[in-house]
Amino acid sequence: MTPHTIPPADMVRISRVAPFWITLLLVPIAWLGAIKGGWSVLLLPLVSWYFFSLMDALLGRDTANADLDTPQTALFWYRAVTLIWAPIQFCLLFSLIWYVPQADHLSALEKIVLFFGVGVITGTVGINYSHELMHQKNRAERRMADLLLAMVLYSHFRSEHLLVHHRHVATPRDAVTARYNEGFHRFYPRVLKQSLRSAFEAEKAMLHRRGKAWHDPSNPFFRYWALQALMLFFAFLLAGWVGIGLFLIQAGTAVWQLELVNYIEHYGLTRKHLGNGKYEHVKPHHSWNSDHRMSNWLLINLQRHSDHHYKPDRRFPVLQTYSSADAPQLPFGYPVMTMLAMMPPLWCRIMNPKVQQWRRAHYPEITEWHPYERGENPLPG
Image (cartoon, rainbow, N blue to C red; front, side, top):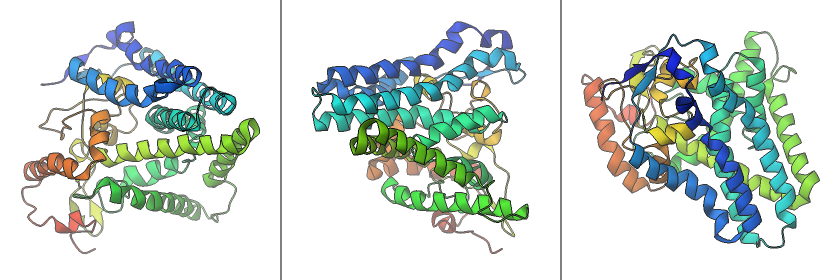
């Protein structure tokens, strides 16, 4: 289906803006689980994964593209939901850390499952919103991104994403580009180690170019560590070591959710190596695209990832979708794809033929793909 363009005047219609605010409904669902207990503690992952997957199947795809000349004033209510989420998540997370440990009607297992669900929110929504905010030039928005990432103890994601991932995406130099035939069980431990190191080295190199040492106070890692320590202190202040434990459960779940998404966004895709350590420019076909309607409302168009890497400065309401001629298409939205990623044999059965098709369509001249698959430069230099 060929994408069509939405006029700027239509962008401000409530029928177009309101669906992106649906994430706010996850907040009362979290509190329902805390107050009622029992099976209701399962509602957050059930809604985030299965309900949105079902609605994707029912509502289909959205191939409409916003006019690229849409003025910023027409995007106000789109931006607003990302601006208010950080304080909302902060209040939700720490109010639950205060309430849940003293809730006698909740068993230990129910408390753990509940905070697993909270981690689904802070990962699926919180880290995703931080991703939108960190790409903006406005300092206040970037600070909100820092706050959201500190709540899941993954602050270095900002440095890694902006300084490493966007620069080296779809090359062996990018840790979070999943290699062809690399199962998530191998990808996950690798990326946890490599992304932290590459983020620190990128900031260190930037400071060196400015004539400063890595331990200069301007190194953002000091801010990252301070904010993360502050979050842990709040958790301890509210509920002692139990609060720390619950906080860590949601943080670990959130990071797992993030890296599942990272895994599927570029799986098996590579930029052509031009020699002398250089690669072709990033194009839409170097990221998997998905225009499934309901999950894009949940994820504020993150699934239009082909356009995000092609034009990283575009705010989420104006991200474009592409036809299969211009970008590879995921068969399902992210909720289904992340579940498939947890089953490597099934994932490879579905996705490897699509990668092979992509290679034939975009790089018919490349006959030797093994160096790319091993994460190596295919040419010397």
